[in-house]
Picture 1 (cartoon, rainbow, N blue to C red):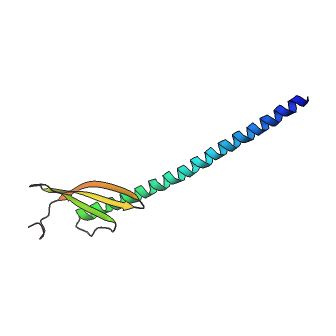
Picture 2 (cartoon, one colour; picture 1 turned 90 degrees about the vertical axis):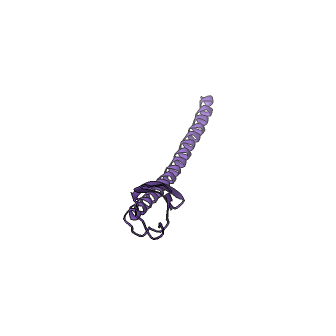
Picture 3 (tube, rainbow, N blue to C red; picture 1 turned 90 degrees about the horizontal axis):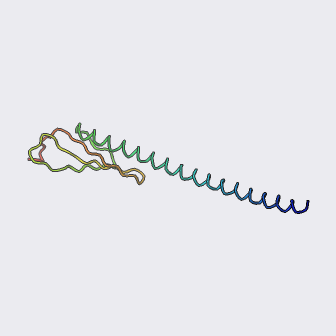
Amino acid sequence: MRRRRGWIFIETIVSIGLIAAVGSMMAISSASYRRSQQRLSDQQIATHHAESALAAWQTNQPLPPGTRIDLIPQKDATLRWAKVTAQYNGQTVELFGAAAFRESAGDK
């Protein structure tokens, strides 16, 4: 019976090691999940800012802070296309949209 005690001790140590390995894998995956959720949330907020900027540009309203609109040059067009760039917490989103061409003092 003395031989059996040695094997039980070894099996116990191996079991504790496996439990520790599984626990550490769960902790790592949980931290990764939280980081990806935060990035997704930041990207959704940046998308909302870009959409708000595009809607403001289309209705001749002032742009929200932190957004930029680059007009895409076109010849003889009734619509003017724009690339809207918005950033939030390190996440950058670009949207494209169009609005009716309005001639302003700067366009003449």
